[in-house]
Amino acid sequence: MTDTHTIVDRDAWLDAHRDHLAKEKAFTYERERMAQSRRDLPWMEVSSDYTFLTPSGPVAFSDLFDDHSQLIVYHFMFGTDWGDEGCPSCSFWADTYNGTTAHLAARDTAFAVVSSATVDQIETYRKRMGWDFRWVSCDGSSFNIDMGATATPEQLEAGELTYNLGTSTPMGPESPLISVFYRDGDRIFLTYQVGARGLDLLNSTYHHLDLTPKGRDEADLPWSMAWLRRHDSYDE
Image 1 (cartoon, rainbow, N blue to C red):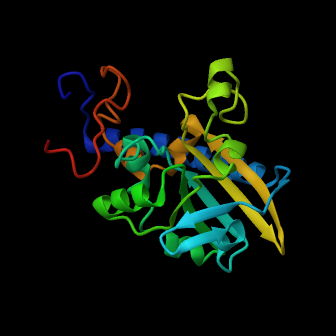
Image 2 (image 1 turned 180 degrees about the vertical axis):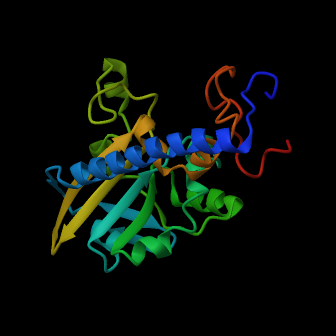
Image 3 (image 1 turned 135 degrees about the vertical axis):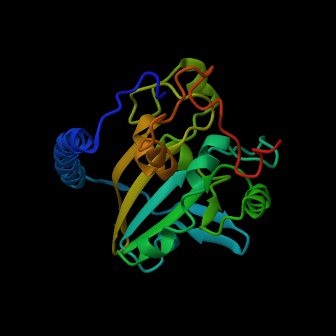
């Protein structure tokens, strides 16, 4: 890369980087305006009757909030027919979640991962990956279907636009998604939802790579994430 990249002295380096810093500050302010716009979006009341499965038994939707008013749900791609391994790309995202839950709780926000897989499948994979965040099963519930994270065979056959706010067809029966909820007493509201490239914001590893000269370095791969392995499988 040194053969093709501009190499300068310190004064020129500082001038160029200060110019770029001004652009990054402008982007930061724009991102803050976008975050406010997101918070200003209208809410939709959703059913509070969903029940999720855990190793200690069923829990109600409201239980996922603990004593908080806000809940972030990551819909992790993992079907009942997937054996004992969840989605590799969802696992890439999930690797960053372990250390965030305590900080989210300090800001009145609970966090949970939801999958269609059974409790046994989830617990087997969770132990292998070393994760300790809350991860529940919606097996037997319509939650993931209602939220647009799981598509029925009929929806897939018809090519219905069920994914990412109805803007695209799902990649398969399971799709990655973030849903954000607010609880007011017994009422629960869906306040925000995003999938596809909108999930990029939540992957700190990608953002670390964006700081490097090579960046994500995926342009010449068969597909963008062809390099990715589960964190315990890079030596295989």
